[in-house]
Structure formats: structure tokens, C-alpha cells
Length: 162
Length: 267
Image (cartoon, rainbow over all chains, first blue to last red; front, side, top):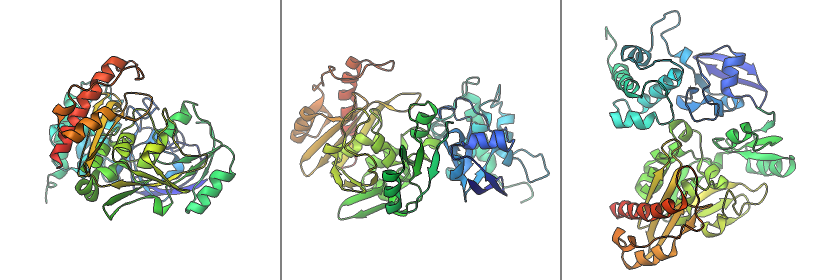
């Protein structure tokens, strides 16, 4: 079936089988492999993307549901087209050593961006509650939480020059 | 994933016709249980009937002391609804504790109630609040709806349209959650309305159930102390890697006391 949606700010129309998962569409058809599939059982959160601005697990969403909506993946976060500038949340993960192997990172960052949009100044407890659906097996979460707190602050700071 | 056809009807009439007419079809709500179930090959429908495009199945309204929540209303929408928070705060806090943010952004109240997972949160609230389950065919009282492990009064092809919750005078929900899944190892919902008390337990056994001894004691005195000595029998409770039946029986009393304490905050 044919579906049309905005992918990282650009209109896309693709033909998909009804049983296609969004994670499959992204990685196998559209070559957007930044979205990782960790467990494929909707538990680990590595595959989180933003659907209409909200965090969803792309391994548990049928691609036909995208029709008419907007989808943002980790590839769509970094700077205006042409620039390589990291998103403030990505920069915060970089600066706070919020990753080790990096496998869970795309999902962590997308979840953090969505939760910050809803709650611009979260407490540490709120950050931890917000990350309950994202599993990291390297870091012990300490630096991820620090990254999200720093990233939220950076997302709300006025841009340089403003 | 194993292939299936997908239908996306926009009216109830069309939906009922598809569910009745398409062989091996299943209704799809938020998909937070059904899609993983299909992936594990525990279900193999030939067709899914998506319920997300039917306008009258979403939304929250309040009239005549009854809060009505459309079956396709997502957990996040219940959790963040000012109407739910002001009329039945236990429902908002229950919804905020389901799964994780990504699950709450897709999962629906109707899907959870229709699935009747023995560890799901909503069945306890539906039963304790004495809600009415409104389907495309009839209205079903909560006491007649839940029938044990993943079993409900729903007939083949019958779908939930909405849930009607009478506003209680006090109510609370407390769960001991699995730290990995946030499912209820034991969850207890306690509700007081017009002198009557209903206590419903999820997670502990093969299906949600009421505890008559606690209800009677709480009608005398609606305090945690009134039920502190009441123990449910572990005989028919579940044992698994998370907790054995003895421990679950113990947790029922502990969580019931916490639910009453939470309910007293809403008085």
C-alpha cells in the first residue's frame, strides 16, 4: 500500500507491505540505519523515533500508520541541512560521556528530545522516569541522566546571537 | 513479520462488517500487545482491522457524574487529561504508570481492557470503579466482563467503544511493579462510593478479582488499619520468577493499604 508522510522534514511517498514495521522501513528500504533495533520486542527503546513529535518504538509500529504524519529519526536531528552541527541533546551526550558502545544512544536521544519538549526543565527523577523504556547495558545510566539534564538546559538556552 | 492484510475503516458500521466478514481478522488498537504477539507467532491473523480512524472511539467527556473514555484513547491522553485528573485522579496516575512513555504514546485503554492481561493495570480500576464497558453491541458491567486469564465477555468480532466510569467519592491505586516491564506484580485499586467499597486486585492471580473481606471491613472504617490483618489465600495466586504465590498474597494486603492511603488523599 502507498503511504505519504514527512520524513525528517521532507515529503516521502513509499509503497509498503501492510506488515512492514517502521524500523524495517527505515533501515531496510530507506537506508536510515541510525535507528537501531536492539530487542525487537518493544522493550529496549533503541528504536525510538518521533511520530508526530512523540516518542514511539518503531519496531512496534506498522509503517502504514505513518500515512499523513510526520516522522523524525536520529538522522533528522542534527543541524540545518548541509551543516554537521549536532542537536543540543546530541552535544550534551557527547560532552557528558552519555554513551559507551552507543547502541542504545539513538533511542535515548530521541526519547530525551521528546520528553524535553513536553517538560522543558525536568528534575533528575523525572528524567529517570522518562527513560524507563530505554535500556543501556554499558553506562549504568548515570551519565545518560546527566546528559539529558544538560541537553534539556541547552535546548532551552537562547541561541548564541539572540 | 509474517504478512497480513490491513484494513483501516473510518466508521463503526464498516468495522463491524469487516470483523464479521474477513476470515481470521483481529482488531488492532494501539498494537502494544498485539504486534509483539504476532512477532512471537503467538497470533497469526490473516487481517488486522485498524480502529484508529473511527472518530467516536477516542476522547474523554464528563456528564451526569460519569467520566466516559473512548476505547482508542491512549494512556498518555488519560494521564495528562485535566478532566480525568480532576474527576478520577486515580485513573490519571494509573495511566501514567503503565509501561514507559513510548508505550503510553500508542497503547489504549480499550486495548488493555479487551486484552485482559492478568498483570495489566486498567482491569483493576475498571472493576473497582464499577465501570460499564460499552461495546458495538451492548453495555457490560465490569463484574460480568472479566473472566480470568485473557478472557472477557466479548464475543468474536465484538469491540469496545468506550468505558464509562462513575465518579467515586474516594479512590486510589497502588502497584508493586516489575522493575523491568512496569507490569503489576500486584496492583490494588480501592474505591469508595455512596458508603460502598470495592477492592480489585490485578497481577496476583490469573485474572482481576475483588476481595470481599476487605470491602466489608472498609465499609466499617475506610482506613489502612481496617484491613491490615486481612490476608488473601495464596491458593489460587500466581507463582513466577518475579514472585511466588505466598509473596503475592502478602503484597495484596500491603498494596491495598497503600491504595486506601492514596484514596484518603482524594477525599
